[in-house]
Length: 92
Image (cartoon, rainbow, N blue to C red):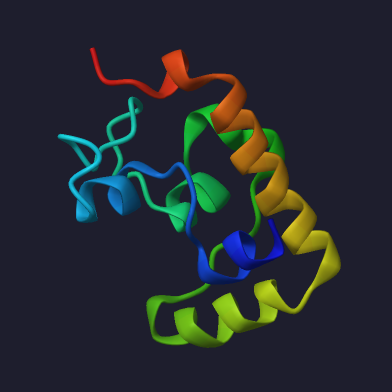
């Protein structure tokens, strides 16, 4: 799970579509289903949100999140929530 967190890989639509494992890269809320989307803006994961950084600092922010225990736990929680509630995240 630690590698998944650090690499931002997981049951995220954008990641799955990139490898032709899904037809769409959208979250059911309408946003692009990236790990960053779920961690900062998805309406279904509000309780697990982290503060989003400015786009020009995104790489440094991702590195800081990967090195922070609390942030990694939040990402694990997001992955677990998505895995346990797959129907909620499917497009109609």
